[in-house]
Image 1 (cartoon, one colour):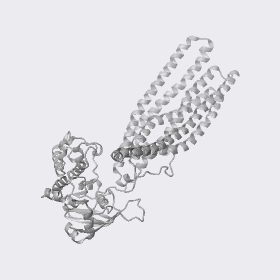
Image 2 (cartoon, one colour):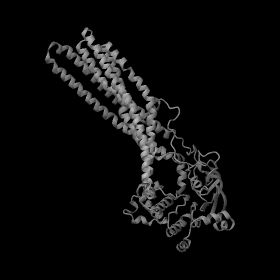
Image 3 (tube, rainbow, N blue to C red):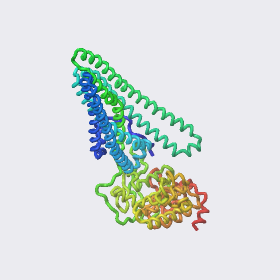
Image 4 (cartoon, rainbow, N blue to C red):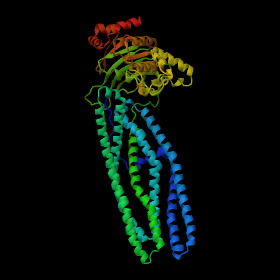
Length: 609
């Protein structure tokens, strides 16, 4: 199986930041009315702030210049009132934008999860789980914060700067021109900042995904690391990755600091030049003291919007990268899809046929042979077929083609004469049940795990309990009754609170409870002791008597469950027959059987007798 990889870190032909962020519109559309209203309210707050210098100008040029102190208190009341209005508008803006942005995040996260569930197994073979986790958590959280805070303030602050510059021209076109010209370097630096920062931001977020993968792997593999004393080695590898991420974050910080240098320096220089020019104009009588005072008060109000452009731009570019990473998953093509005009099987009999079936991984080198290489095999309704072969002969891959975990790359697989690709995946997987050698359970109760494939029983607790008990009995999972809460006991993450054999029995019970027409078992008894295996086999015989079954056998004892055996060599079925016939006629089959470990057969015969 190919090793997990990640997509190209610098995708070619990247769209502009505006176009990339515009792709968020379908998700953000329900929140747009409140976001726009939040912008309007925030703009009103900014305009109110710009009105305060006008009041101060009138105060300085009027009552204060004439020595009339009685007008100070009315002016104070007006300024206080404007300040309270500004504060109320800011509070209203927060209330308007916070809730809808969380709905956008939830919608995007649900869409991403649905997409991950829909994408084929081949996609998950190629992608690291940490990369997917970082996209579903940190990237979407960043997008939410940008919608609620970054986007609103970026639009409002840009408009505030424009309105503020107009007001400055109202007070003095000369000083305003000086202020505007002195601010030009800020916009030049901002354009250069985007090109550099976007690359570093992408690298940082990819490294966060790599780090998340390392944490996940070390947590899931903690038993192995402890058993082999490799905890220190794992820590060194983690520290190396963390150091790389730290270096990238420092590079980001340096880029932001250079932008901040200009954002802080330019306004100060502009203030100094305007102060010199303002004093000269006031001395020449071209500008009143009140106008000069109001000009600098307005420029001070504009200082925050100008300075905020730095972190708002960095946040916007981070969000653009997060959006790119989100849509990399959403744009992934699903190669295992439902047909436009699906067929149906009303009463499945369970006849399973492989016709010249081929399969190879999409990224396999051309010179590599197909993993499944022209298999022709028919399993009749109610028949149990065992697949036997050396490691790497294609047994597990062949099984995965039945429920379309992978799609054939040549030939076809049919169920009751219908190509499995002509059925919807939902219908096909109702007819086909599967149990894997590596039993995976979910962090839920025993009941929920076993009845995972029976959503039809949710509203029928009596029948659900009957099916549950029957499946547990067949799988010999009597240990469940000894758990603290019985079938309602939670099994913990991936079922690791249980032994390997217990997990396998619950996984087998899950496959049996689904009541499929075809049961596909990938060596589901490998972790069981001989006595338990014998009891499970006895229970399985009742199920297999009426169910078409395809079983990968890694033990001679499993072969005894089968009516016939198919021998695989290098992805091809080279012999089919009963166990005794193949032993008598096929040398390679005898070699394969002799290589399987089953030194406890006498005790099994005693149990099955």
